[in-house]
Length: 612
Ligand SMILES: Cc1cc2nc3c(=O)[nH]c(=O)nc-3n(C[C@H](O)[C@H](O)[C@H](O)COP(=O)(O)OP(=O)(O)OC[C@H]3O[C@@H](n4cnc5c(N)ncnc54)[C@H](O)[C@@H]3O)c2cc1C
Picture (cartoon, rainbow, N blue to C red):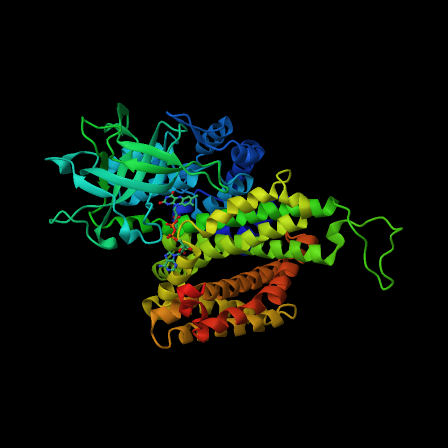
């Protein structure tokens, strides 16, 4: 199975990605240049990533007392990724970028996520450097971001602490001005940081010359106390090794020490670390305290960090999707070759007949079609959101603003829906394999383990759900929800004209109304405790409605283009089948999810602790 025809259909035939080259920023691009990027990424993923997916799972990173050791394959994969130019794919030509649309960058990264999600931590480096390009000074861009884009340095995001994960307002890492004249350092106002950061991905390794940590820390107020809440949080660049204004290593190690590696369920190709900042293991200038350079203004750290969140969350959603897709393809292959059982006829089974392949059993087909509907639907959603990022950056003012607001509403879904349902797809992929799926002789158990992370990081499932129901659907007077409803209604109006889709269109109209009325009912008393008690079921219903819309729109595109290449009869039949599956088996679930939302059911919330 190849991802490419599915990607081509969604990108070019459904989303019209080619038309982005009419925008001034992308004027040098065309379908040819986009395809060349995909060809390169597909090849690197095939040669440098996929063959080593199991290697990085079994050869977990380990610390030899001095260095973190990773398999050679990880070094090779990262070098190849950096050499492809993908680290700065969307950046301006002047900084060595390719000025590609984000839609194309996100699609190209899908190949790597499917081949081996954890070998590369390129998305972290890109996210880190992109943030600096927006909020950093010219010197910070030159010294840190540009060296990250070239692959010489890599980047991390240090938000979480042992006691502060979902609740970042409780971070206690402290940053104090580093002596007189601290503001005059050419690399940015210089502080000394002390504290512990937990779960830091790619926090220690020897893959690059240096590691650039972006660290959230609090600058104490005049009374010496940390300011409560997120207001007090600032953002700092903390390099693992000190650099001069030319980006050269000075030979001095910064006071950032590995306290330990976390041993994870999956995603083992990327190190995950507990880092101690400023404990004095590597004193700088004879003094304990990690040297950090302020990014942006003091107390605006979280705002700077969240600048990157939409893209980071689309990245997580895409990773979840591609792990689901990898499992789908593996289980499809298996189902086509595994003989087991015989068909049931009216007279029972005929044991004298040869066994049939399991793909011929209706229940196995159900599991395969569910995976297809989840994963191809999720891929379409991620590409749609990536396209909104491009609209936000390059469309005219009104369209750009609409894209911004739509992204606000859709981002929790883009992150969470694939994290839940493409994980379910991985579980079904194991089920299709039967007992073999539960062994390490087949790849599907690893896909499930790798994918299990995605409901946890970048905002847990519960936190995303509360963000959706507690903030996103209410913001700007509910305009984001109205915009989304208008887009859904536009699809319904077109689909209702198509005999094959009219029933689905009506079902989607009802689902949309139900989501709207449940949103109002949840907030009828204006009590967050009651409204948000069932935020996750709400997000599940919201997500399924969004995916039903996406499938209807994709089905419309498929119907309108039967004659085009890449839309072969079987591919078209598959898309229509997946859309039908979604409407018959999945969308009806929303009524159960919304019931507890609209009745503000407090069964869970009210159960006393001792009753558990
Ligand atoms: C492999 C891995 C890689 C990671 N990489 C990074 C990284 O590079 N940088 C980084 O900064 N962090 C990283 N993280 C951290 C990750 O973002 C956190 O684990 C996550 O934010 C959850 O925080 P926590 O683990 O402290 O769990 P908690 O916040 O303690 O949550 C535990 C449970 O309680 C629920 N919960 C918490 N608060 C509430 C609430 N107010 N209402 C309802 N439910 C609530 C959560 O939804 C969750 O189910 C990584 C984590 C892992 C596992």
